[in-house]
Amino acid sequence: DRTRVEMMRGYAETRDCRRQFLLGYFGEALAEPCGNCDRCAADAAAGREPDTAQESALPVDTPVEHREWGPGVVISGEPDRITVLFDEYGYRTLSIESIRESGVLQVR
Image (cartoon, rainbow, N blue to C red; front, side):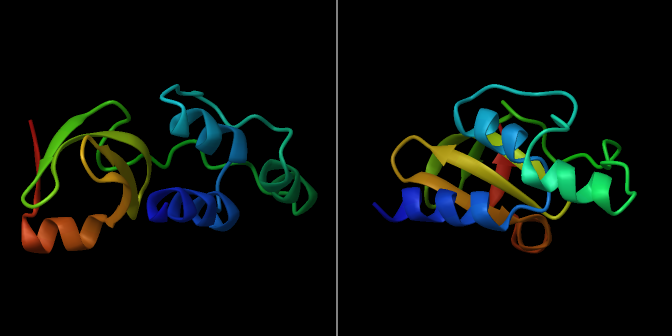
């Protein structure tokens, strides 16, 4: 299934806490980075604090409507992109810039 491959790619490419990513996939949220995954460990080794101030343009659990794909729910987000689980089309990762330019996605 293409959407599952996209989610796996998202997991592999995320620059953020992997535990937050996984919990988002399963519909749950973790308010702070875990401090235990490889991404959090890399930040700690480099002397960087995890950026907890970065927020998604659309919060997790926001109901949305896509012009072609219909209704869905935001399951994870980063400042530049969100992942939405659409009722009929599965998981899709969308660029915030593209959403704003095209108006293809609306909050329900």
